Image (cartoon, rainbow, N blue to C red; front, side):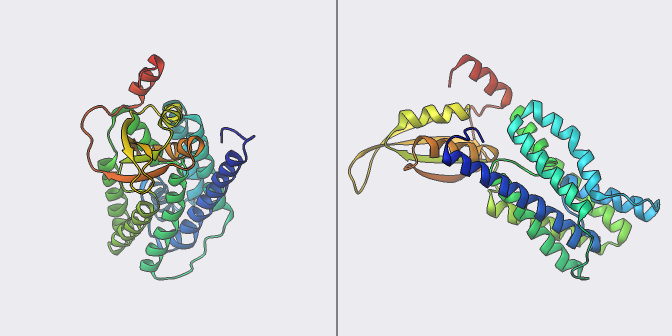
Length: 300
């Protein structure tokens, strides 16, 4: 969404808006048509909001809209993301969570199936599809994704343990409130959700990109305009064409994949890119504070 004068940039911006609306619709459908009617719970912050609304209804006879709770929880997280991550990512993520909240209030709660297992599976798959495509296009649906980015950028750590604890609390509380079988339904929905997100986007926190190009200097410059990441340039020769080429190797986080893809498209649309799973990185992998210092000193 940087250059609306370019047809390519305009089309990319339009695709992002389409994906944003798609992610919001799928999120609302997964809740109102599958999770809420059968007391199956989602993961993360949205699951916590759903659980809070369910408990207040069950024990206090107070009816709260899950969508509004999600919106209220996302406001302070969006403020944190605005200052710690970046304005574009945070704005798109908050817009997505805002649309989810509004659609959850507007759409009726309809029980499409009385079977909680079917609800867990279909709700997880549909919700995961929306989140997966959102991450693929460089934003999220708010909530724990923004917190994950803040932690990853400031400390280099992930929130795997935090998410495990939160999801365990959601599953146990759901079981204690509505019956222990609902703990298993909730775990099933979280598993389906996670699998779909990982299939569409990536399950790895870091990936290595190997980029084959005939114009390495231009491409390195374009990458460094978007990312503060080291790039290793390796000389290469085309096996069929016998022409001189270069292979650029760069390691990025899962949240930087979209920015890297856009930089490559704009600088060398003919470049060949291979993304590979990266299980562990030793050495210098900058967090956000280190990236700011490096960018200020213009040393990459």
